[in-house]
Length: 499
Image 1 (tube, one colour):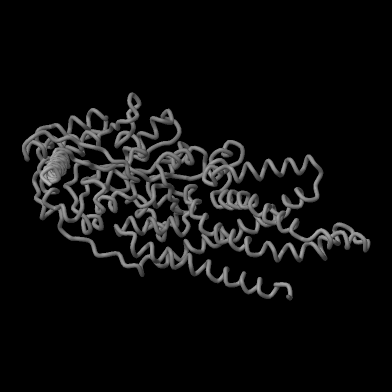
Image 2 (cartoon, rainbow, N blue to C red):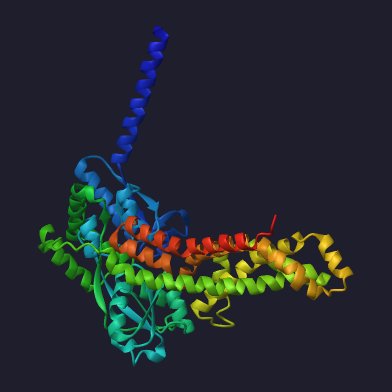
């Protein structure tokens, strides 16, 4: 009994020491989130040691950690957590990390929903155009009917959407900040609107001659840190550290090391040091209602339906050809179709989208919508081909032999005997494939097609929550897929052979 009690006390002591040690470690550590995929100069993997990150936001996080440690006693370190840029707000509220820093834009909606720091960097939204257009394009008003690319769920995207009705420009949303400039150089888009830091980095990457940055900025914005709404006290401590970094010149040194310092940053520092939080946070944004987004979601749902319908039509036509080749074709044709089917089914659809849209750009510049239809249609054709082949081979052989005995040709057998029965066998899996294709169409957003899921992601990022946008998106998908499944069941029942 005494031994048992001794073990129990020892175990409790170990648990307490472990817990207290973990709490002490967490107090000495500032866990912050960012997106290393965004690249330098914000956050990027260190080429010398890919397990570490570098960038001016990395150094800002480290400066904040040191400042917080000094104010609370004892050293404090910064620990990085990778998160997709568009999910920073939701992740910080979930508690995945304490502070979000990765070129996070200061918006009224973000301030209304989270604890947001003072601005620490001022950026300019600038247009990039091809050299031959530099003398003709000076602002958004000069882009009537032109295709303008940017990152989705950003201030730049909101500016383009707001200017769409007045200027007639066509906004294009990308998931990264590399391909917009690549498409500008290839002539797929007419301009790119993004932060001047991103534009200058892309210009250096392209050798300085791929495009021209328009001198007059379209708008100004600021980068901030974002914390959970409940962490307003910690946010105030972070603000104090940032103000001190502005006063002692350490923030300026960080920006100079990364070659992003300019006189506008000094002016920003002066304004921030003269104002207090009440002035900075004045005027919370009104909540964005779901009704305001319904027209955009409806339009995006139309794009999803059209892409899915055209892709399925292509899949059926190509799939029938592939299945016929495997069943009726000579040996070489059966081998070729088998290679195609296995290659397509064995590689990711996302990879095929990139190959068709970006990989073939040097040969043929397909419009994004056409590339999406081709990629989805050719991918699902491989699956349809196996469905049709299985359905054709499921027809009993005695029936086929009886038809040949009666003198029917293979084409007549296919039209009168084999085809109708195979259609009944294939109908259910065909319907399942169409529903799956409807959902897989969400992948086409990576090549700038704004379909339902992409529009929902933009909506969710702007309002800072996935609850209402996700529910609306799910309801729309169900509204499109359930009638299709019901129709398929009715046809199956009608065509079911009599007992």
